[in-house]
Image 1 (cartoon, rainbow, N blue to C red):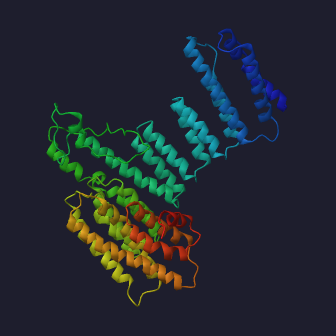
Image 2: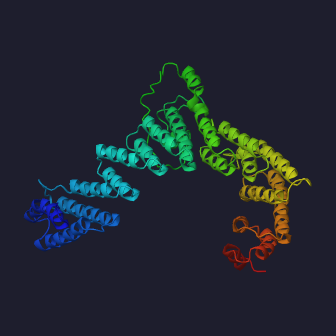
Image 3: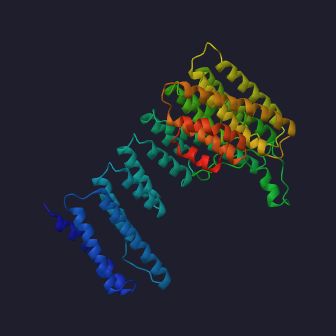
Length: 470
C-alpha cells in the first residue's frame, strides 16, 4: 500500500507539465513556480499524512482558487492562452477528495458547490447536490440551497418545489424549512402577478401605451421584497391573448393566485406545531412582506383567525389579529380609516378580555406585550404629517391607554417576587428607543425610571438614561 509521501508525490507529478508551461509562456517566473511547488508540496504531504483535517483541504482549495485567479488575470493581460493547464479540474479534484474523506462536513460541500456554481459547471453542481443531499438528508439548509439553485440558476419552479417537499419528508419538524416553503410559494405568486401585469393581462392594472415613459410603465408594477431567487421560468404557461378578460377571470380563480397553496402550506405547518403561536406569527410576517398581492389579505385573515382559534389569549395571536387590517395600508391610503376602526376594535376587545378580574396574573403581562406592539405601530403614524389630524387625535388617545397598560405591567412586576426575564427588559428597551427616536421624550422619561428599577443592568436602558437626563 502506498505511503503518504508516495501519494503526495503522485499528485505533485501530475502538475509538472502545467507548471512548465506557465514558465514557458512567461506567466510565472522560475522563482514563483518554485514557491508554488513548495506550497503544493506542503499541502499534499499534510493531506496525505495522518491527522489531516477538513480545514487543511479547505485551505488548499482556497490557495488553488487564488492561484487560478492570478493565472487568469495574467493570461488576459498578456494575451496568452494555455493548452494543458487544468486549474479548474484540479480544484474539483481537491474538493472531491475532501468531501469523500470528510463527508459529514457541510462547510466543505458548500465550498465545493460555490466554486462549481462560479465556474458555471451546472452538470457538476447537480452531481454535488445529489451526493450532498444523499448524505445529509436531515439538514434543512441544504434542501433550501438546492431549491434556491434550481430557481435561481435553472429557472425551474417545479424542481425547486420538489426539493423543498422532499426536504420536508426528512425535516418535517424544521420550522425554518416550513417558513421557506411558505416564502417560496408567495414568491411564485408574486412572479406570476408581475408577469401578468407586464403582459397587460391584469384587469386591475392600467394599460400602458407604447409611448409612455419608464416611470409610467413602472408605476403599475409590484415591488417585490428582496429575495435571493432569480426569475422563474413561466414559459410553460402560454396564455391566449385573444380573450384577455376571460383569461383574467379564469386565472384569478385558480389556486395559484387565490392564495390556496400558501394557506395549505400554513395549515400543514401548524399541524406539525399545533400550539406554537410564535411560529404562526412568524409565518404571518412572511406573508405580510407581500402585501401588494391581491391574495395576501385572504391569507393573512386565515392565519390570524387560525391563531385566535388556537390560543385566543396568547400575545402572538392577538398581535397578528390586531395587525392584520393595516398590513400594507400606508398613511395616505384611503383604506386607513376603516382599517383603523378594525384595529381599535380588536385592541379594545383584547385589553378588556385580558383585564378581567377572573383572569390569571399572566394576563397583565400579555396585555402589556400587546400594548407595546400597538405603540410601536402607532408612533410612525403620529409622526407622519400626511395623516389626518382627526385620526392622529384618536391615535394619541389609544397611545396613552396602551402606555398606561405598559406602566401597569412594570408596577406589577416590581411588586411581584418572581424574577423577571431579560427578554422583557429588551422589549421595554426597544419600545423606549422607538419613542425616543420619534421625539416622545415625556413618555420615555415616565417609563425609563421604573424600567431601570426593574432591569438595572440592561445596557440599552442605561444608554437611554444617558440620552435623557433628568
